[in-house]
Image 1 (tube, rainbow, N blue to C red):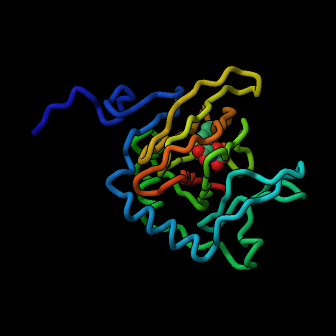
Image 2 (image 1 turned 30 degrees about the vertical axis):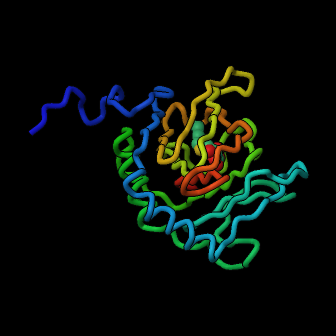
Length: 217
Ligand code: MD3
Ligand code: FE
């Protein structure tokens, strides 16, 4: 048996980058599951293709998105919300793949959030130049549940701000296979993604896929 200097929930473990009191990057955590995860993305997008949605302010998002799970996040001229129905197909969103749920529940537990019961997963696709401006995730019903994010494909520079839009944001690179868990006091922090640089990934080419597993309802 190997003696570990690091307890199971010690935030100073190798491969962990502490972002805030209750948010942590688990570097490469998803790498052993990449085949299953990409298979899941293919299943989802066969039923609910990536699409560019409109913001309430009248802009078209540079990030294309789809969803799986009981609830999916949407935006249009009427606002942001979660819906059981894909507005493009009129059908329920595809089921959340078991591999997504298992990874999220285990990563949440590792980060100090046992008992995570997700019901929603927003899948984002970035192409070169795609960006996400600073925002808070406030459309979920209760902020006690964490959000688990999985990054695949090209790297991105993530912006992690504070509780106010004007708070200075830290820049954190996110790579293929990284998993991030955000919750508790960090749950409502402003965050965003810088415009994606074109650094083609051997497996995914000129795209980045990020999915966030959530409890929305
Ligand atoms: C920090 N997506 O979909 S994931 C989003 O890389 C979103 O596609 C980004 O922000 C992406 O809403 C970042 C990381 C993330 C998700 C939720 C958070 C960071 C968060 C909630 C609170 C604080
Ligand atoms: Fe967000």
